[in-house]
Each structure stands twice: as C-alpha cells, then as structure tokens.
Image (cartoon, rainbow, N blue to C red; front, side):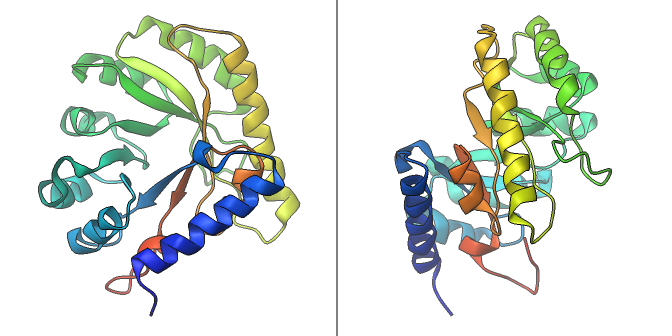
Length: 230
C-alpha cells in the first residue's frame, strides 16, 4: 500500500499536468487534505508530507485532531454547519466552505471574534440531494452579507454530480467559475470572491482545468482507515 507522501506526490503531479493543460500556475492551487475519516496519526502524516491545509466536516473531528496537530495546520470546515454549532466551531477554523443561508451568517456575526473567510456554497447542478444556493440566488445573498463585518466572502464552493460524464462535471465547474467572475466584478469590499473551492478525489483534475484554487481531496491522499471512505 502506498504512503501518504507517495499519494500526495502523485496528486501534485496530476495538478501540475492539469495546470499545464489550462495554462495555469500550479502555485495557484491549494490542496485541502480532507481528514474527516481518519485519525490524528494519519492527519499528522499529511502535515509531515508538506500539506498545511486540513478539512473536517464535524466538530468532533476538530476536537479529535486539533490537540494533536497543534498550530501546524490551517483548518477548513467543509461540511454543513448547523447554527447551533457555530459557537463551538467558528473560532477554531480558518475557512468555512459551506455558507449557504442567512441564519448561519447571522449566527457567525454573533459568535465570531474576527472576520471569517467564507466560501458561499452553490448548488450549480441543481440536484435536490445537494445543499447550497441556486446560481440565481448568489448575487443577492452576497450583497446581503455586506451587513456582517465578521464575514469575508473569499470565493464560491460547489460539488459536481457523481457521474462518469466528464462534460457534466466540467459544465458544473465552469458554471461556478463564471459565477465567481460575476461576483468578483462587483468589487464588493466584503466579498473579493477570488477563490474557487471545487474538485474532490475523483474529479480534481477537471476542477483545476476549470479554475479551482482550492481542491478538497480525501481518500486519494489519506487512504482508508477502519473501513471508512471519504
């Protein structure tokens, strides 16, 4: 079985290749290693392999790993954040990838001690199984967030459909990029909106070709542990 470092080297090469195809600089792409299904020891392997960005989707994951990892990581909360959990989570993360409703924004404003870098989650594909705003709702939502000085919209996030159809996946990512460009062009002080969080283990290459600046990669880096998959 390959090691975390070996898998990471392979992924970095795939990102470099995707950037070459898209005439991009690989340094524009940040890998977020999703460690939600592995323990602190595997997360430490990720850090020791040179990755500094770790992604968790539950408070319990932060509780388990942050004491072990210490200040060596930048923490991304990539799951849906319940309003009642904001108090316990928001001061412990560097990025939130799932801002998708006014009630959550209001709670972040209430609980955060400093501005939080947030990605607005967009359901580009329109699947009922996915969370996020519809593309036509994003502009008004981002403008509304100007009322909250504890929220900084750094970009948009989406998930592509689980399909083998590459063009469907590519169209989803392209749609988010075009929407990001529209929001960025508004030049809102609270919403620079320069970043794109999209692409996971199965489709990050396409995401990079379409402009991803943050890719959220789980099992392709950390492998499997205790029979779980991420």
